[in-house]
Each structure stands twice: as C-alpha cells, then as structure tokens.
Amino acid sequence: MRRIFKTLLAGSAGAASLAALMLVPTGVATSADHLDPPSRTDGGVDPNPDIPADIADVFAWHSNGTTKIAMTFAGPVSAAATTPLYYDRDVLYKINISTAAPGNTPEFTIKYRFGPGQNPGEWGVRIEGVPGVNGVIEGPVEQNLQKDGVKVRVGLFDEPFFFDLIGFRETRSTGTLKIRNDRNFFDTQNDTAIVLEIPDANLGAGVTNLGVWGQTARFGGNI
Image 1 (tube, helix red, strand yellow):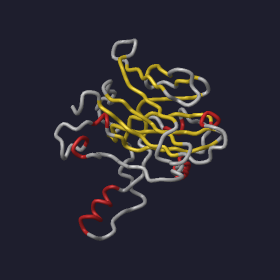
Image 2 (cartoon, rainbow, N blue to C red):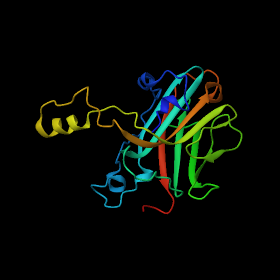
Image 3 (cartoon, rainbow, N blue to C red):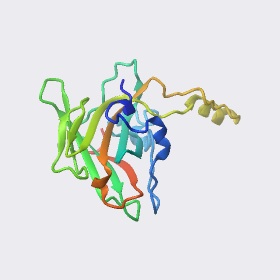
Image 4 (cartoon, rainbow, N blue to C red):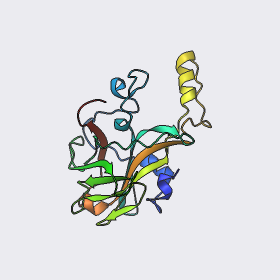
C-alpha cells in the first residue's frame, strides 16, 4: 500500500487538503459514486459487474503552485486480499477540467488507457491531453512518471476516504443515528488510482476556480 500524499505529492498540504476540493464556479454537474449505475457496476444487481470502469472518487486540491488531482476507481478492496489490480485495456478513462464558466464544460480533457508493458506480466499506461505537456506521458504503472513539469503515478493506493459505512447502514435500518467518528470502514482498503500534479500555470493565467470530474467508457459495450 502507498499513501497518495506521501509518494508522488510529497510536500503538499497533506490529507487535510481534501477539504479544499475546488468547486464548480457555475452550473450543475452530473455526479456519480461507487456502484453507480448499479446495472453496470454493482455486484448485487449485476452478477458480472464492470469493476474496472467503476469510478470511486475524484479529489482535487491546490498547494505550492501546483494543482493535484486524484481519481480512484475499481475499489475499494481489502489490503490483505489477493485480488489483482484492475488494469483493463478496453476502458477509456477521462478527467475533465473546467477553468471557465460554465463549470460543467471542460477546457481540458485528460485521457488515459492501460496496455501490456514491455516486460511479461507488466502493465503500462498512456496519458494524453495533460495541460502543458507536449504529446503523451507513458510508462509502467506503479512508477513515478514525469514530463514537462507534470508528475503522474498510476497504481495501488490506500483508500483516502473516511466514513463509517457500518454505522450508516445501521442508521438506515433502525432509524437511530449510529454513525461514529472513530470507525472508518475504508481503513486498510485499497483503490486503483491515477494521481497528477500539474503546475498552475499550465491551467491558464488568472484561473481561480476549477471544475473537475471523471468519466469512463468501455470499448465494445458492457462485459
């Protein structure tokens, strides 16, 4: 396991920065979460869920002259489990960035896909459309990649979300508040994620608000 905030983004404001999620300046953006839509990604609805295409969370924050973006997917899974990472060459991932109104139309769209690496059993990633980068960023997963001042890492990370899911479910079933602030259902869980660190200048002069959201698309339809 690797802490997102202790690898690629060393020197950032740390986990407390999650509260500084940058807001969409105008407009309303469509939202989704784990297992949504359930007909495609929820194992309780679909016996063959499309786990690689299931976006978990998108985080964005700013510190020290750079914007950090992390999109998690295909998780969470137990850190002790032997479940393989979900690198699927038939899924296209997108991170959309809006720097001007309306906030739900992107000025930048970062696209990435996975494919076989140069060595047997190795996976690689190809990332295009990164603001300020000439061409593509590509290389093996689980390594820090860097080009034109942008840093990227794709791989397995500790699940950064803190929430008492057990208490939430008990609250729904009993009608009595059972959520506790000392119980984290996602502790010791992992996600597959992409994390980027982009110089603010790459996003344009005078940009003070960002809208950031993710999308996935499967080539050939559902599995």
